[in-house]
Length: 451
Image (cartoon, rainbow, N blue to C red):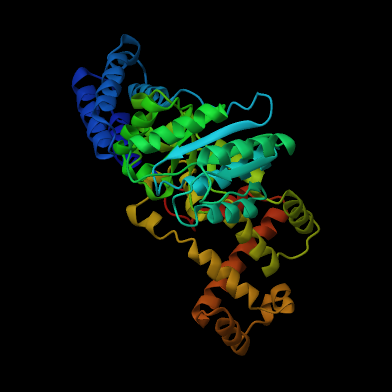
């Protein structure tokens, strides 16, 4: 997300870094570039106008003009205004009510509402330690109820059954009673979507809202629809008291216009981002971290949080102990590291949060392919336990067998063994406490600027 915007902003800000003094002329030129970058990212025009005006007012101030580092001062202003535009701070869910706290999900058809219900249920269970019951009132779309039951089972949330013959309001009442009996902390209600905003849809969801009195009414919208996402959210907000927005499919949106427009157009905060198809791919929206990513400064806080939630601490401790004792790093350990990387959303998700990513050559990010993780895992899984522990014995006939078993070529097996040997050397240095040496050794293996 924000790839094209980051690239344009990065070039503009790099040009300013070399400027010894800010003048009205170079500020005007920089703002023209920023305006074009925002419009190309499909940010709503009124939002762009306000943003540029706010930056201009602050940039021509005396403190910036006399700053020893005017380029950095300008970047700080842009960063602050981006944060302000998107909502200043993360707006968390309001769950401080007598259980069950009801969350009503609204949105158009195809926005990813049902999947988001399951993602949110998982997030509430794992990070907030809440018991969750989910229910579908979508009696119009074929298999909508079955789909919710399937994903609810995957994330371990309780599911309240319903059928297409029932009325949505009757389903909601019965589910609420069930949630009270079962002492569920949170009840999430999936509603019917339409292809467009219509009177029938609004009347139905208004009725559900009246019956359920939800503490949170979240609008789920596809980020790839750009400023249309903001306009649709506004239409819903005019008919329904929304408390926030969930922006989905952000992994497929390189522009990011919706994220920058929604708060100002609707007055409602973005509460979550859907960052992929997996049921773990949901993260709270932090405007300051997103602004940092747009300006190419990375998002190390989110990366650390992601690591704490997804990495197996016990496994990491075992590996560290093993290395300290001087025991070799083998292919079992190598495979474990890739599995941990997959849990964190893959290589692309990891790189997206590292500082300096927009400075990489255009082709470098295109070469990042998470399918390679699966290929590596398949090759190692095709080996015997003995081969994994003693990779040195893997020669000609064994390589052919492993390649055939994993559906790859012998060249792929050779490439993996070479990568493993390099990693093994690094781990040996790490085991001896040579972290500095290890980092220097890794430097040449990554694209310029990454380390």
